[in-house]
Length: 253
Image 1 (cartoon, rainbow, N blue to C red):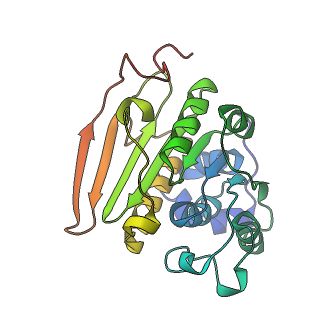
Image 2: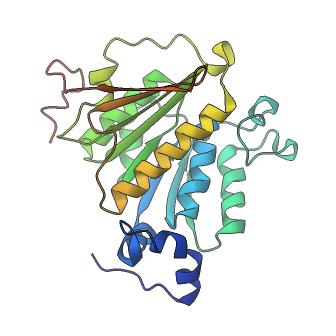
Image 3: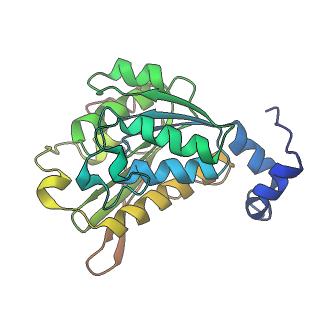
């Protein structure tokens, strides 16, 4: 890998990262060269976009067809009442570019219905982050990442429950393996969502993304992390690849 030069301004800006022994200058350069795609700019994706940009990742693809609504403001902190009716991808692009002028953002204000859409978007991505709230869409993203051999980090929050898992193609259980027969019956508008829990899961997704890009081991490969926000308990379940997986993830190369 050919590393980008970090000038004095960069060294100062990223100094707290560079001081970390598992990141250092080389790890920061890897972050600066990386490309990440974020699907869903709701509670998780909203915060994720900030953490990913602030980490030094210069190329970010934002995927969301939705517009800002009043109910979003309670947990989607980049939005204000002035943004009502505006595409989320446009608002977040403006927010990030004002803070990080050299960032390169590609926007995809489209509804994901087919695997081929995702394959095209993630073609050059190092990591894919799924913050969507729809099981069908998650399965489409999961399959596309397996086909394109892309590492995928999936987060979800519903009610008092937060979940996180990482899919490493050809190594770990995929989303379909873990949620084989799951049916999408509810959304946060039906069940509610604990706002600070959204912050917890998005932060952990960002940490996982940074660790993988900088060459550190995934924390959630073949694991499903479940956080109960009501009693602040954490459970980690071991997962394994399912030979009967509908995406045939064991056969996809």
